[in-house]
Length: 276
Ligand SMILES: Cc1cc2nc3c(=O)[nH]c(=O)nc-3n(C[C@H](O)[C@H](O)[C@H](O)COP(=O)(O)OP(=O)(O)OC[C@H]3O[C@@H](n4cnc5c(N)ncnc54)[C@H](O)[C@@H]3O)c2cc1C
Image 1 (tube, protein in one colour):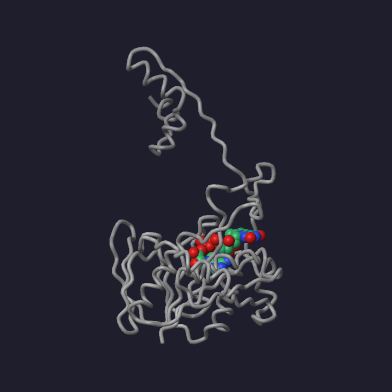
Image 2 (tube, rainbow, N blue to C red):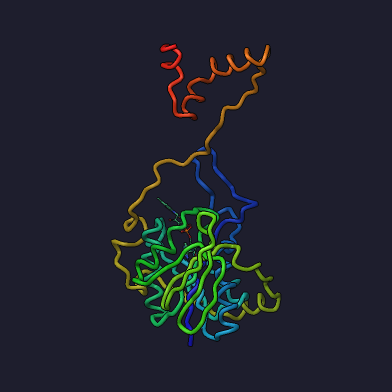
């Protein structure tokens, strides 16, 4: 039986990102959560593969207790199991610690996995690092930014757009794929399925102890990177009207902006002026 794991992250709803301009941080606790759009596309891809090949889909997320919601939604959308990795010790993880934790959890919950599906990136942190790092942590091949997936036996054929070229790639299972939101138009959540998922389905919750992870490699401790500052960049825009003949306007442009123009064309206009 084909075993698939879909990694899903809960992200704040884009329409209501409460942002604290003083601290420059996102007030995640005040935002409504939703399935990251690319993770939803990954789940949809898994459901389509199961429709033709059969198999089992495990939806997995690492997050706070409220992340359970996205697992229930994933079950309503077709996942067979929902697994939540939740523990204070896992909090504050960067992408390295996140992928380490997901890898150990997959080995624990679904050791005989065939295919791992992730979104290509998230809408809140958007590093696009977790999928490739997860493949590395599991010691399996991985292909990122995939738009089309076709499974034949133990070989996946994929298509992706890279540098404006369409690439066709093949990978033998087990392997990992990160998908773009262009992979399929997302299906609607069936209302009956939602009700069952929120009332009947059981979510398996694992803490750091149950995961048997190295405490030095999880959460803040296991994070190799630190955010030193977060701020909204400000831009200083003003309108300037230049008057005179076209020649005079061009001269004024160079008088005012020769540094910027020189920088753009890769030439020091000031030293050129001195020479002439
Ligand atoms: C330097 C740094 C410090 C950070 N510190 C904090 C912090 O203190 N607190 C905090 O909350 N966040 C923190 N973050 C954010 C946190 O590391 C990321 O949200 C998390 O590691 C996932 O990265 P991403 O959202 O960029 O995922 P991407 O790499 O963009 O996601 C790609 C795919 O990976 C999978 N995936 C990603 N995250 C998860 C997950 N949690 N569960 C299941 N699947 C997942 C999904 O399939 C997703 O579509 C930090 C990030 C960085 C770079």
